[in-house]
Image (cartoon, rainbow, N blue to C red):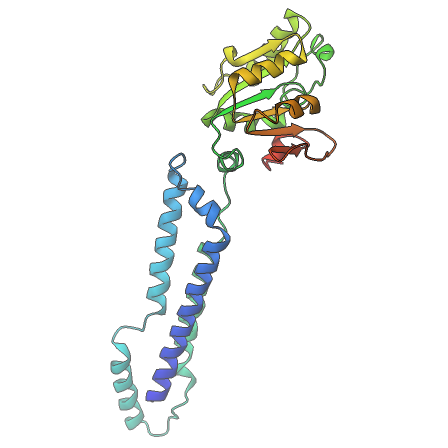
Length: 278
């Protein structure tokens, strides 16, 4: 009977070792998302819930794997008493194995359910991809607006619905400036009205004074140089190339994939695609 007890205990220790090893693998695969969720900028209910979930999982798994109340010695005495009163029972009865398997199975299910990879929120992705950059400049045409030329703005201005969520997340923790070249004052008014109707100004992170207009492409370059952002977002490859020496990071938005003009320039078919929201 002592051999069975030792084998049972050894099996549980091995299972506990495998579960701890699984937990370690889980943390190594998700370490960046795990720690980003507890950053000083994002200590929210989701982060607290993740901490609580991990604590509950560890405690519950340990309790499921520990020996039943009374310990091995008490179980051994009961089994010995049972064997002496029922000499016909074999020492290899399946009844001594089933409870251990049930406990191990339940513990494994708990681990499988609670140790799922943490899916980062869009806000966390934006922070990570922007490397906590605090100031961002972005052109409007082709990035925020459906239109792609100043001539189109003389007729209409339409905010891309797919970019709104990303744009609002950026305004939550970045000093964002939008800018564009226009041909007349009416175009300016259309752009501001389109942004206002889309709800861009309601979040409090972006105000109309931070939407800048100029009459030339060089004017936009001058805006960016003066503001000295951590990131600039543009569709004009010439401007992106010119600014590569002065701006820490840039995103070149183009429907056609192009080679990176510099190590600090990233390419994407859209702003929302760069942040993986579509």
